[in-house]
Image 1 (cartoon, rainbow, N blue to C red):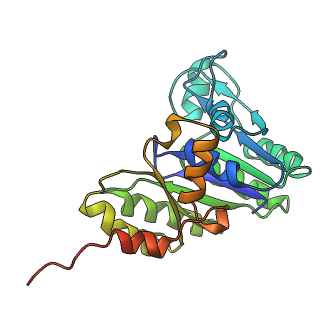
Image 2 (image 1 turned 180 degrees about the vertical axis):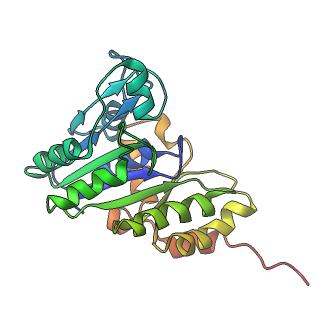
Length: 246
């Protein structure tokens, strides 16, 4: 798991929080790369700064491009008259970081197939470019908990499979204190829809504080393969839904 691309099933699903949780629990030096940061002014803190705040640990962080408007990277770059980010540029940065870091996390913008440049390249193309350099990347998908997540997760998994990219697993970006019926059912259905294991469910609101409390929440909410102690079977059983009568 030396190179892990983090994507979502859409926007505002918790990619940055999940990226921070994985970074917080990883052993050895960790690098976090953001190919294209959108919707942030030059002097404002972006997603990589939020990862540092949440983890409370020393990380190597890098942005390749920053655009002021909260749009898809290609659209934001075009409107700002700024250069776009291309897959080989990202792959080269990942390769450089991988030389002296145990884990390189690459956090995408929006979902997997959001356009980054005028040729329509996406985060998936960046992962393929990294694979072309022999880096063997895998992809972690961050999903929502409720209605609609099965469709968007299945579509993301299908897009990855069609490109020959390895799906590492799925993490629910925000699990509420009082999950509804659909959310509880989705715990069993998400692994089926994605064809990959459910590797965690971060509690909603865990990003309100950083450092020790966040690290503890991450450890309790991510599976052992991501450095935590979370058990998917036990969590699913604890939220099991009784069978309907009749």
